[in-house]
Image (cartoon, rainbow, N blue to C red; front, side, top):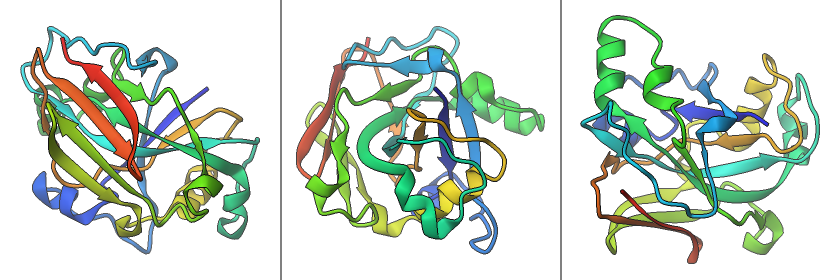
Length: 208
């Protein structure tokens, strides 16, 4: 099982971090997390000692339901039928140092338990059937920090699947984190993080 993460897929998020937008005529930016990054079942998230600036990034997750390689965009919808929510935890200070040196930044993204995944995945048909018409929210201690509208993605889910599968074979159970909207920020010990998808609570866990 692979965790594939899409970067800079919402214009306002790219702007808030001072990043250039990807070329919409090109391909999405993506990176990967190992399966050891999974944080399941709303277990608590423990802030790692190596970071002093640990950020949340709430994202819609698409679960791949069949094996595919070099998938044409027009057929990509056949490769998923369930969605969930996740948090791409990012050690922002570690990431900044790596980027300043022109180095890869897996240490900021791929560390243990850095990918919180909702215990439940919802059949897309129960949410209206259109993956590009979904809304989600993430809150800290009851205060909304992020609001996402998948219609605002720079690269659609089908385009993401087509692009990624040019390079990497997708397998049943692979998870695609589709990018985060604006509003990312730090988490602190003692906080509670919740996230909803179309009004359904998907994530609810403590920061320790």
